[in-house]
Image (cartoon, rainbow, N blue to C red; front, side):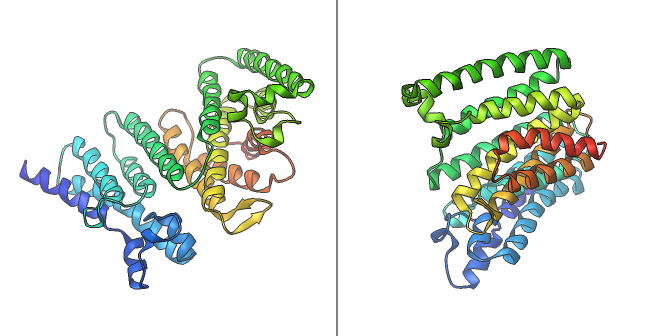
Length: 335
């Protein structure tokens, strides 16, 4: 048992190594006092630039991979594959020598999940799903802590994940009927809002609606329209993947773009937002591969398509362009 304890401690120590902290220290300042005050690749990008951010991202991913490899190399049971990787992530988030204030753990979590993909382990897909959800929750908490993000709206928009989940268990015709009915109800609500603006002042609606939606269709209506068209024209598996990627990617891009975005690309879209969109889509794609028959190449194409379409959708609401656009790209390339 001593060997197992030593490996777990080593995994934590490896995870606690913070390249962003030491790179900033070499330049004479404390990274936790600048930018987002976070020790990770995002804040490194904002303060030190792209080259150093790439170094930090690769190192942080490598920590998760190396921790799992330690458990494998020393012949530990599969339980310790999970534990070693988990303690590496905890070390990244709570480094002992920095008053337990580290990074968000997203990159190290990705490394952990990448490492687990090479092993045939029991409960692997459920562990990967749980760790993905954990990473998203921690990331949102850290973002909320530093910036004024409307999490009520984000929580509301996350309900859209119900649609691809349901679609996995029913046929196309049933899904079209369900989405069609819900879309009709939203369009009726939009019509009522146009003729009675007092409805926009209701507390619930005001907390989840953007100001631009007051005299326009809601983004929920646009999303439902795009989903309905996608389900009508494209294969079921393509639409499920497109919906999963676009719901998460669009939300993460907006959160990171508003919170940390400085380098503008198109309109109000930023480099940080686009990078966050791409990485979150890849992360989610790895999770989906555990439950659906997708190839990793399909996931890569889907993540790229989501990022590019979200980036260039400046004149048209991306809730309308994303699901249909990503589905179209995947169908065009026959994945």
